[in-house]
Length: 256
Length: 261
Image (cartoon, rainbow over all chains, first blue to last red; front, side, top):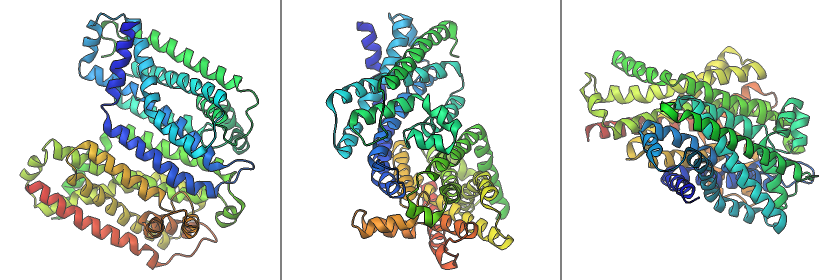
């Protein structure tokens, strides 16, 4: 357990060295709220939905997603600078190393997004304490799942450039084909295929649960258990698959 | 002089196409904005806006071409910032050409790379909105080229005045978001003006949005392609011309100064 904590601590420390990335993301977040969110909410009209609050809630999930993805880039950095060999020489089991990196990736994203979520809640106004805690737990699992996904792709793709492109395209598709920016009914009405993809998208699950927890006027979430189960399945799949693949790849210089 | 500038262009274009997969990825992200986000936004427009712009997809398509132009023309700044940090400019100074040729070549190549990157996005826009007449087409190309050169100049000016990549990236972020979100790229200018009149948006940002060259370029393309959109006037592109001239000059002088430091 102690060793696992050390791996997590290393990844959290590593993230906060990327000061420029943090500043950039904060600028992006604030300008999205103060400029895009404010102006776009004048352009959009959805019955019984305050689009500004709806968008701000979705924005927190989008930011969490992009921060959790970043762990994959650290894996390339480690491989490029020979840190991988050092990590393997440590008295930490492979499982602890892999699990620690996955948890560390999610945790640091959550620490980073925490103050931004606080800003969102201030803008949104009201919170339902119990449901908010459940939604927070769901966001935790979502962040771990995304970082597990990022690790899985990073160890499967050996070129950092290809990884960068894949993550960019995936980001564009996974965020846009979700309810982060618009309600599911509108996505479905626009294009049924988009609607089907959005219904099974983990970003949709996280956004819907966060809005439910933050008490945002949004299309009623009939059963919060469904998105919660969806996030648990996403988290379990990528943490499990990520651990197995990473475990296999790091033996015998498989990352090179 | 022209021959030397062509050499600089060739050098920068080779660098640009080294990242071709990255460019393909970037274009697909832009297209995702158009074919997913804009399509869904079409169904959420407020009735008043719906009357004004009819379709968000059609409204956004020209804005997207300008967005792509901006992002790719700005890339030259990152390369120049890296050259500065790695002191590659010593090598640049050893090349048998004048400082001015080198500086103009860099600004021009940044702009031309922006035009090359933007062309599939502009073509997509024409395919869905209809093709402009031949004179309109040349006006569009001319204005967008001026804009691209201005953006390239702006990015070079930032790149040479920032000593670290972190500061450059932060400054780039600030410029990106202010120029994009305070413009008519994503939404009609009337919305920003309305917020300004209600006192919910700073007047200075409203004025900025009105004179923003990205607004002028997007609205110019719309005026040619969207029926019912306010007609094009040469006066409306004055901001693009001034922006381009100012930053081309500023970037060239700043680049020469940094080279000789």
